[in-house]
Length: 196
Ligand code: AMP
Image (tube, rainbow, N blue to C red; front, side, top):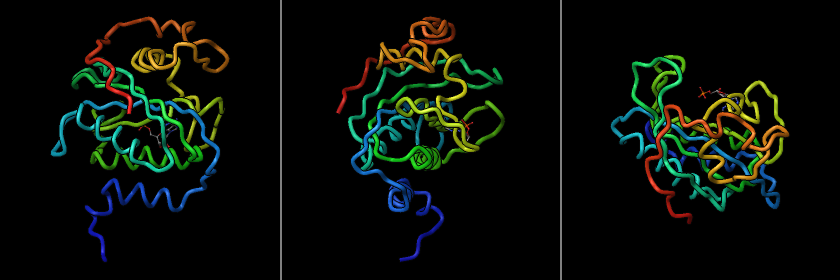
């Protein structure tokens, strides 16, 4: 069977490819936190739909389990101000994927939402970042964990705190980060979706 370009960016195809070629430590599950954001609709749906589809993609992955999702939030954009507010959420997962493979899964989810990057810190159909990978500190060309902006972003810290109120980030309890209690530009949009 030959695949068209559209087939090739289908999430199932991409996620399967990533899984098959990965360095999976099958019995070693690590709790990770992902930050999801979207602020443009496209032919696939609204920002909320992009985020929901990504969560569904995570739930369906064989090497990801126990997915928990924070409330959805609306947040003012960080970069250019002439763009819509973002929808943000944080997702807790357990995964047996190695960090760079998890990054590839996150990027495949972005591609599934037909992500187009128009400008730096600009609008996007989907952004999926690895915020924390267990207690790991990772400094690789393609991956920095904890995520570089984590400590300064209320739209990440507040939903993360909702899921994990006692979590320690880079040696500091989350509630000691000023942005974890600063609601500037942030609104809660929906009750926490059911955990499945
Ligand atoms: P952006 O989509 O603007 O958030 O940035 C994407 C780039 O950041 C990609 O090239 C990734 O390789 C890199 N990156 C570095 N650390 C991370 C991380 N913790 N999560 C997601 N992407 C990361």
